[in-house]
Length: 195
Image 1 (cartoon, one colour):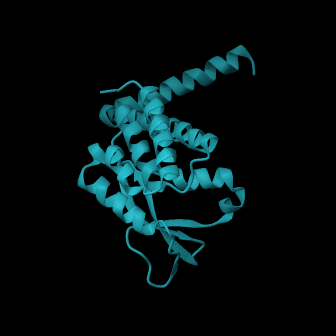
Image 2 (cartoon, one colour):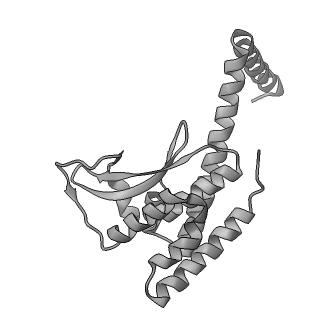
């Protein structure tokens, strides 16, 4: 590519942006802001997934989702934690949590599992608020614990991390949870709050 060709490409992009701006200035800036927020959200999501993989922190979709929501808030991105069902390959389903913004869905739990166990990437994943009566439901041993943790989160999200330790009965799990809280604190502190 010559300098002249490069210059012409840049000019076309600028003219295109100007035409969009002239057509509808509000939509132009809204699109640009939305694109920037999606990029920031994706970077934040990827950073959390990388940290979880490095720590081997898997099978904790609620805690991972709550942490992602907190990180998004630090970046000025509105989001909410969703509790529902993850349907896998149209054969079975499991209780699950993920995060949604106004434009995207982010599933830290599944992304971590995909990195730790690449064979799971081939599954067709769908999300639903309600369970599908036609699918087999995988009852995990931690389902009851998940329900208790969800109740804690729903009741008071601000105290969720402090109260969650009460859900773990044995000292080894409490020790693991304290490591997760330390990881959370370091990650949150790595972001400056944006207004």
